[in-house]
Image 1 (tube, rainbow, N blue to C red):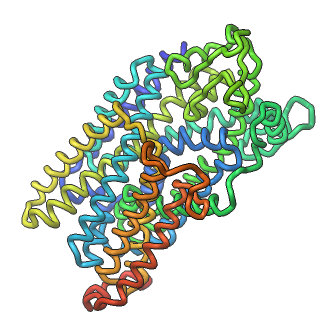
Image 2: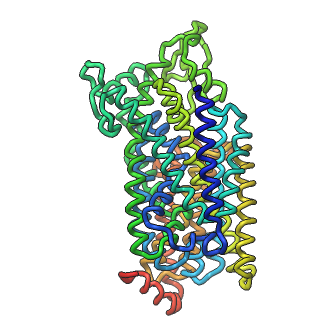
Length: 557
């Protein structure tokens, strides 16, 4: 069978599975809609957390970033991995014992202020909409290549699927759907990695093959060969970086604290019965996440090696079928500048004739390596599973922020459970439509917006959560001042240096030599300082709030 038939078959079966699970696990109350009733087994929650954490960015983009950036791309690997560890070990157990299953809810109650709650809602919506729009766009790209439909049609199909199980099942449906999606995405990620590792190095474990000698008998190590290929084409050595140590630290830290403040993962720790189960599920999730994250550098190196050897100095007319298939999506383009019909892929922009979107690396990798058609189709299903699992989690955060943190907590406190559930579903449905719109019509500054989302989470949520747990003296005045100033500073820096037309200058004008992607670290530090200083000029929190903080820091359930 050809690739398209295999893709229809595998993707169709996976979608039928998701819909069946949603019907089976339909939510009947706000408790089930928000936290799946709080009765999810730790292993199932660990799998769902891993699927929620590993979005299209992890499945599709991370290996592509590392593949094209080499050593400099490792900041994303370290930042996103470290972010989960930080969340699981430092924040999640305390938030679980606090009993608030949204970040705005924690901020509003801990700082006894609806204004603080509203600031949290605004930040949660910005972060969540940014991510969910990216997931929907990823769905469209996968459909465009493997099902040969327009990207916009692919986005609409993804909207329908997510709408069905997110709106119908809530967290209960999403949890068990994500368990299935984790199984699909990790299988789809590992199978081609194992195949290609054996092809290149003879090692069936990709993490070992990554540091092994090539199977061609030359005695050359894979990374040494890749460094040599890079030097020949004028690129920086794959294993050496160009960023400053300070900027690498700042970006890694911003990604860590930013992802540790992402609301769609925090809520997962409220779906298990107890704190003990929350800790166990965090351990399961860490192991399950590590399988993909330790494989990503290997996939990046395998794909980069095969790509360079396939396209460099090759005749355009003799390129394999995969090349023309990706050309049709617009994610690969060839411009014959010297009119000799040979692809010149080099670092010099004036001479380079090939433009490659780095997001295609994982998806195109099996085709470049000439793996069986069913493996290629499996990767498509894995990419869709990764995108849809995170999209569903983010949509739930959006619906919860509207129905619980705005309507229930501020606008209509006497609303019934049935009425709140209705508003949660309406908000989720509206969020799907908005996310789909931005998936079809992505803003021109989408890359800047993604970096802004991490920076905002670092500059706003992280200090407020940490100080709310570990500083009894932190009051609403300090927390709100820190959140507002940290967020505004991050917005200013991102607008100045990332958005075109604002005259911010280039790298030479960056403050302290820190890139916009890493400035969330600076904004976070300023948030901490402002919060601590301002809080000391105002009265301490009420005694009941301080007692509450004492309780959540005590060992036990």
